[in-house]
Amino acid sequence: GENVEQHPSTLSVQEGDSAVIKCTYSDSASNYFPWYKQELGKRPQLIIDIRSNVGEKKDQRIAVTLNKTAKHFSLHITETQPEDSAVYFCAASKTSGGYNKLIFGAGTRLAVHP
Amino acid sequence: GAGVSQSPSNKVTEKGKDVELRCDPISGHTALYWYRQSLGQGLEFLIYFQGNSAPDKSGLPSDRFSAERTGGSVSTLTIQRTQQEDSAVYLCASSLVGGSSGELFFGEGSRLTVL
Image 1: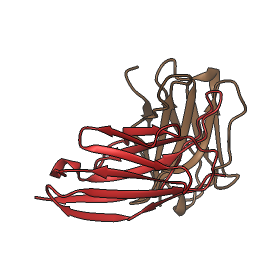
Image 2: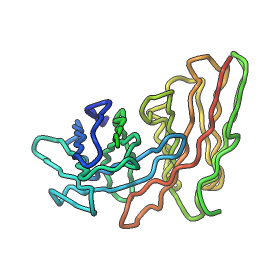
Image 3: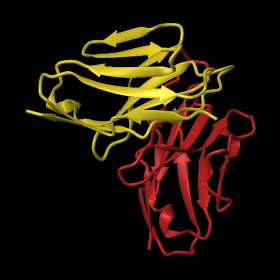
Image 4: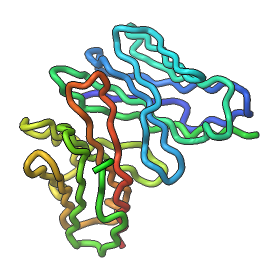
């Protein structure tokens, strides 16, 4: 089955710096790669996703890149702010006919210091 | 309802007891997931229900764990003969199959503590 590895497990940056979180996946048939943000004591929420037919997607200060050949994808956060502090999870799935079993990475705890 | 609802929000039980956790997904969502999140850890996949198809139970850690989904809506996760290592937050999520996004909507979770 699918296995997703995520690095680093913790990341500390100064406000205004960029943050990059990387994930690798094992199943070459996976075609959907979302990122979820979980603030302390709250439920995970989708922040951005990418499908395998594109290499990059941006939404304001966040972007995700995908390298299908290498089977890895990354989350980039620019101009970080204290409210970006949270745990970020990458995930991968092989969507087919509506089937969408998401396997998550272990998470990255991001701390943005003012 | 407006979102995914889970109950109880907190459950403290003694080792060896059985527990039932309930999930009420968003109306119209045909996919339902259970994940387990141990303290400070990631989201461990447990089970996935997809419409009327047989559920994907490949993530259940032992035969003490089972889940069912009645009428394609409410789901119950049952843990028999609980052990201390079962202590975790159990998260339920649902999604709309066939939409342009595969977004999962999570509940607040059920925090299980086994003494």
